[in-house]
Length: 607
Image (cartoon, rainbow, N blue to C red; front, side, top):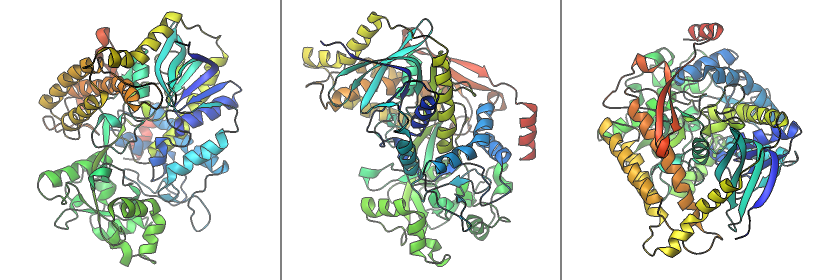
């Protein structure tokens, strides 16, 4: 077999969404050689599915907003398990990153006086999300891509990385293959930035695209890095539930930010029931007050539909489980009701939510300006990920950096809507900056030939099994069974018995995944690709289940019906997972450093 084609860079960025592109741009600006690997085509990253906006305390709509309020909101939303240094940096730097994106050509919606328009979103005290209708992620990727392609980095499209190499205790490069032709690739690099997104494809119902198989999490884990907060998976309250072919596709929180309300089958607006104690002071008592809030009335309080995502998702599930759901197992999200309250009626809705209008019209034959949408929770985001340093984004493996959804820390136990897009910009920039700095200060490392041989054999093993054994199992059945296990046993509502079943089932699936076969050749072979993705999804699923079993309380995105209350004793540490002997996860508790005095005062002032 021909040797892998070798490429050498100072910094290798894996993932070309918002975080990966921003990291590549920053590293290139530092004058180092940069390679950018993406699993799909450039511009097809899952970031384009982020619709509502990017959170930044610019104060363009409500001048009471500032970084301190944003910081306090993020910490409260994350149930104070956040890496507070990351929350501080994010709140302080997000406005500059948004203005920078504007300078690079992003076309934001505008206020009447020409400023970037900001909208309301769940968990944010003031209108804070800079947006482009409901296509903000698409505009971010377009802008970063158009700016980035002139920065001198080399792009490797439709490539998958299967292995990271470590030499002398630090990162040395990566191994992968060209998905189109199946050619093998060896990347030598002094620093690697992981920006590969989340793990949603390990669940049956998800808003995530096909790329989201936990690649970055698993690559770092296999290389010896720590994973953190893996029990905290966010189920977005509103995904499509009908027709079945589109179940799980995201319905942006921007619908609720523009005045959309949630109703059960009886037409009752159920979100006014059971407001969490720590949000009562900020939540409207009446429908009229909530409506005024969405229209910019500074004296009003936000509607209950804009509470944090974990609370809204659980309330929807309660309505469904108690028999008050919609015909297809969700609830109704109604934006059509505002037609009589705003000038322009239906045209106003189409202007504010163009993607949602076309999505429902084309996929479900529903006109959202006339009738409510049917929605239900969908696996959307993982707060857990690679444990990184708050300032540099470097993992516990020297030279290995991470940014965006595959990195942990900023969001704690629950992410506020809109914080993800500004997270990509703030920490993508920082990861690229410090990866370049790391590469400049160090000499090139070597990659042992035996490591390359082992990576090559592992990548091609499914073909060996597919041809040598006529009864080798295909990968799709295992993927389906894993999704079923995670959806039903480690989903929105969890308990000890179900999660223990999941851990046992994952062990069985891991054994079967090690024997899957692929047939045919290496060109355009999705069966082979899925066979290799299985290991990543299984590693992430095991880390999620083990971490969730150990957290015997309910907090943020982690809800246990056998421990329905928050336990203060679990509020002072994060769960950290590292790969142990035999490939099994080793779990430990890592105490959260005491909050800095000035930041503690900020939280007290903003309670």
